[in-house]
Length: 90
Image (tube, helix red, strand yellow):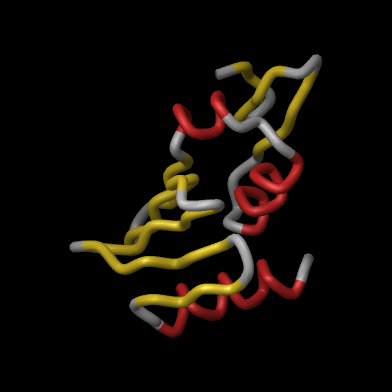
């Protein structure tokens, strides 16, 4: 895991309301946090679920997005240039 991803996870677990490092931001919202990459929301985390933002992942299926989502525990991948969650194209 990259240092930036470890920092992201630490910020989420510590409840930090506005953590930024490089191109990644953890931003507090009502009921949880948003994870942003280059200003685009890639996931939302609350006390029960971690939800990927499928529209952003379809628009920006990059290895960095995959890496951040995987650090959050989401089974994200890119197969045949198509973004996948749990092995299924989205």
